[in-house]
Length: 302
Ligand code: ADP
Image (cartoon, rainbow, N blue to C red; front, side):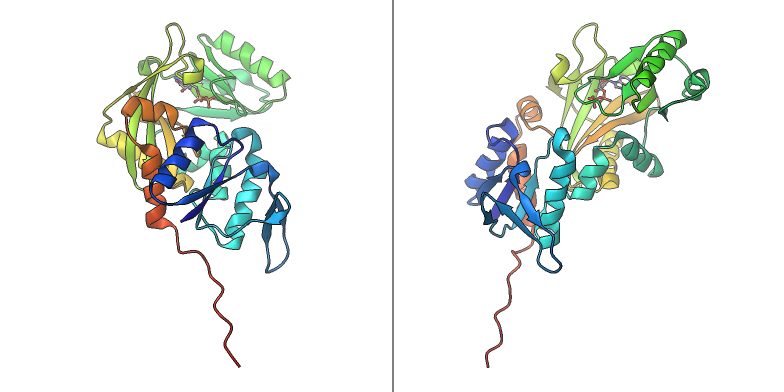
C-alpha cells in the first residue's frame, strides 16, 4: 500500500511508530503536513495540491489531526474522501469526537454509561443547574479544554456556583458533571481498533490531584478490564463512527462511565504501558480494510 500520514510533525512518537510499522510490512508512507495542503473543489474533479503539485493517489490515509487544527484538518480529510481514498477514521467521526457536547449526546442516545452531566452557556438559575446534576461535589469543565486544562473540582455548591459564574464571565460553554469519587483519581484508556479493544491501561493521577492526564503528572500501568468495560469501549467507538479510538472510562458505582472518545489516540503511553505493537495493529487493520486504489479503466479502442 501507499499510505498518506496526515500529520503536522513526522518526529512525534505516534507518527514515527506508524511509519516504522508500515515500512516494516513493505508499505510506503508519505507524511503530508495537513495545513500545507490546498484544494480545488471543482465538480467531478476534486484534487489536493501540496508543495506545488497534485498529490499522488494513496491506498489509505491515516489522519493524525491535532485538536487545534480540527477545522482545516477535517476539510483536508474530507477532500481525500471525495476523491475516493480510504481513510482510517473519517472526517465526520473526527469532528463529532472533538465536540464534547455532541459526543455525549450521541453516546447517551445509545444508552451508554455516562456521568450525570449538564451543559450550559449562560444559565439564569445556577442553583437549578447544580441541583439538576445532583449537587456538589461537582466537576466543572470548559468545553474547549484538552489535557485536563479547564477541568475543576468544586467540593461545595457554593464553590461550584463561583466557578460557574467565573466561566460564564468568560462567555464559555461549560459542562457540569457528577464527580466520580470512587474512581479515586484513575481512569482507563481502552484502545479500540475495528471491533476489538486491543490494549487497555490505567492512568492514576498524581497525589492530591483528581485528573489522571499523563500531561498532569499521571502514571500509566497495564490493567485487565471487565467484559462490560470492553463492550462499553467498543460501542462508544462505534457510536462515534471511529474505527480507531482511545476510549476513556471511569469506574463508577453504577458501572463504567465514558469520559471521552479520542480520534487520534497517542501511542506512546499505551505502547509503553502494555508492551504491545499498537502501530503494527493499526497498519494490519488498514491492510484488511483499505480498498485497492481506484484506477481509471482503459478507454475502449476504436
Ligand atoms: P480533558 O479532555 O481535558 O482531558 P477530561 O474531561 O478527560 O478532560 O478530564 C480530565 C481528567 O479529570 C479525567 O481523565 C479524569 O481523571 C478526571 N475527571 C474528569 N471528569 C471527572 C468526573 N466527572 N469525575 C471524576 N474524575 C473526573
